[in-house]
Image (cartoon, rainbow, N blue to C red; front, side):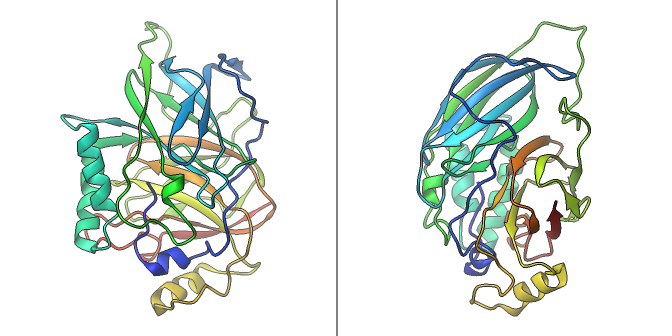
Length: 316
């Protein structure tokens, strides 16, 4: 659901074909519960395989609670797989969602802003990740009972982003009531069985708030405490790059590739709705990266990154 909001945003740090983050653990085609994952009990594992347009699951029913999605792709194109997980709200249907998505991808800022407002109203998105062939990623989320859908927009995206509106295929996942009233869990705990890990907050001011040093191999929890959907995309930049330089580039209106961009692997968390949390596990080369969100602002239609939603971090 990451959208190309302008040629400027497309040029921002995606000049080379991206390589998504590798998961902390190797992916294997298996569909069994993981049982107790360290001290974080009751987690269920689902293996997710995308081809850029469709999503296959190792299982289509899980119990409510903590679910770990191990993602991989067979798509060798530059978009890999960009997999989102969401559930519909109110009277929204899949056709409603497709219409919202078409608005979100509009090149008209007013229509794009409307699309963001519609998506905030009609779906609750729970992240998942963007992956490249050979570089799987894992996302841990807590799910309540209900019907969820997954989609893969990887083939819709190239180095310069989308052209036209997507028409995604959907894969259904049913989360069943666990019938265990004595067991409680919190949404998006930062404990993943191996210890506490860093948290990055996505705020109502359209900013990333969190540490500037993160593990190159490990896990990061994202918590959306704002009032809109957000994405979190990491792209490599030259050592010493600052947020001031990134904002100056956006403000300049330049159509040239940014001078601080590096050819290297990217990774990130897909769309996360307000009030939701997700933990992304990855294994990336150490270095300097910029974290950005390209969702359209719900009022102006301008990309959040151009409005200042970027943060330079160092992975060590």
